[in-house]
Image (cartoon, rainbow over all chains, first blue to last red):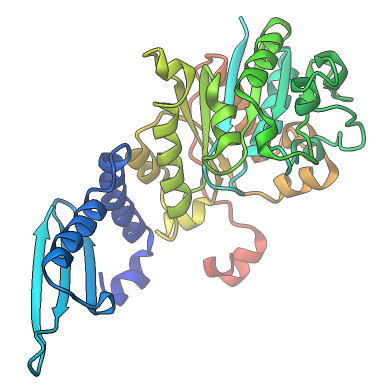
Length: 93
Length: 271
């Protein structure tokens, strides 16, 4: 929604839409363990078993959408020879 | 038969204590025998809103610990002989509440009263879960605002899973009380509307309390708004809500904007 619409119609429709998306997600996951959190930890554990990487060079992004959430784990792995190779892993939940 | 009602919300500052006092007084005024129980151990305020802060000797924790008998801790309201307060302790913390202690106090109160209204602390910790534990029904106090609505949704989830009734496979009757509703802002799309909140929370509506200076004025003088100014808009809304609790079918009026002289002179944005 652009600024013009916001000024004209008020912000309540935005509040309503944000709540609907958020609560749809929270209701489903309310009594379940944090699946994406567990996935993130286990993925990092598996990779660290095989390659050494710097924990500071790990970028984790989580995007919760209406029907699909994306977990993006971006790990920079040093190869010891010049520039690092980026290693990227995406998961859809 | 005694009825245990919890007034809860998750979020703080939405009007649980104000609503407990106003509804308790409204029910007592209509002839019901009512006790309001403050579960906010360490941060009690129901005594203050009811104007009984200087009469507290014993409290819920003293009864649980066996320091006082229940009748010694109950404070009778000076205006309504059917209305009693069981205050919370101000010096102890939430851990002083025990599951068995609360169960025994509630069961004793059930013998003496028609309505046991439990004023829940904010949050979802021990005090809040114990306040709802024995509830037959619940009032979820919600402001038309995103964080309040989200927390209400969370509390509704707890009412459906952590109460004794839920554990027995029954349902706690849930009622939504929307407070601090500002008709003008909702009409202008600046505030979630009643329909928005109902559609999101999917819980039956008990009442709509308009934003009003009368609520603050009543708490300033230590009187429930339903006693302090019974003809004011919030008091009438609370009286209607109390009668709906007793099963009366009263049409729900959605407050409309009443524009004062200031607004008329300076336009709607002046509010």
